Image (cartoon, rainbow, N blue to C red; front, top):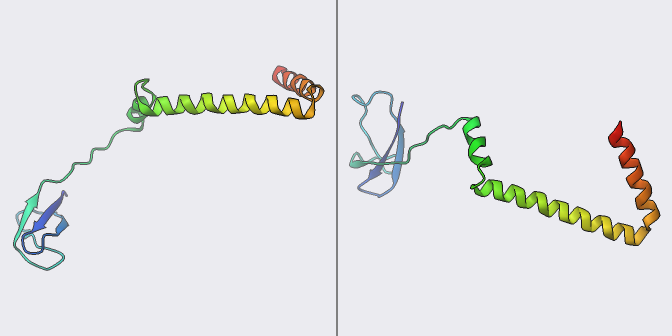
Length: 108
C-alpha cells in the first residue's frame, strides 16, 4: 500500500493518495478535481531500529554525543560553583557536616 504524490497541472498543488491497487486507480487532484496530474518523486521513509538509533547517537563523532558531554560538564561546573558560593555564604562548618553525611550515605 504505497503512498503516492501527484502534482496537479491545473492548480499546481500536490495531492497524496494511498493506492491499494495501482491498476484500478485513476489519480486526480484533491483540491480542484482535475485528472490532469503527474506523479511526483517523493521522499522515502525508512524505519530504523531503536538499537541502531542509540548506536548512532552514542557515536563519538555525532553531534548528540558532543551535546550530551557538554551538558554533563556544564552541569558539573554549575554545581561546583553553586557549592562554593553556598560555602562562602553559609559557612564552611555546614558544608563539612553535609559532606560527612554524604560519605556516610555512600557507605550504606
